[in-house]
Each structure stands twice: as structure tokens, then as C-alpha cells.
Length: 97
Image 1: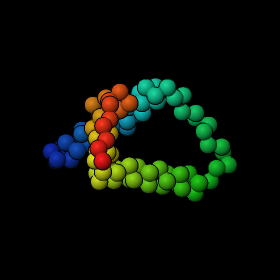
Image 2: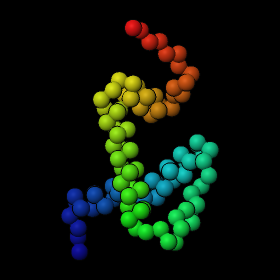
Image 3: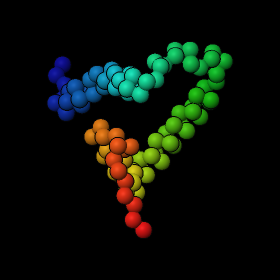
């Protein structure tokens, strides 16, 4: 059974995406000196609604950060510096009135 080229391309593009995301998250935690995630982070009695609410709040915070990057010069500059690996604190900032 031959698959369509566009379907195969989409599958190959996403192949291993979850593993790469996990590796990236682990590297970020290590880079910032954080402990590895605790597998028992959420007690057994935690309800799905609580976890769902936490996920929604995280999405909201991410969206606010994204909008800040898009709509403010300071947010854009900080985003570019972060992507290039430049420490914001080492740059002398000059503000004019």
C-alpha cells in the first residue's frame, strides 16, 4: 500500500517531535539550574479539572508573552536577545526622555 507523498512528508516531518521537545525541555531545566520534573508532582487525588485549569492558565500566560513580544519594542528586543543567547543584564541600557 503506497501512501501519498504529502501524507508521508507530514509524518516524517513530525517524526520524533515529542522526543525532541522532551530533550529541549530537559536542556532548558538543566540550563536554568532547575531540578528534573518530579513524576509524583500531582497527587493521586488531583482531579482532571484542576490539571485542565492549570494547563489553560499556562496557555494564557504563553499567549500574553507572545503578544508582548509582538506589540512592544522591549518585548521584541528581549525575544531576539534570548534567541541569540545574549544576556540582557550585560547590555548597558540607555533610556531617553
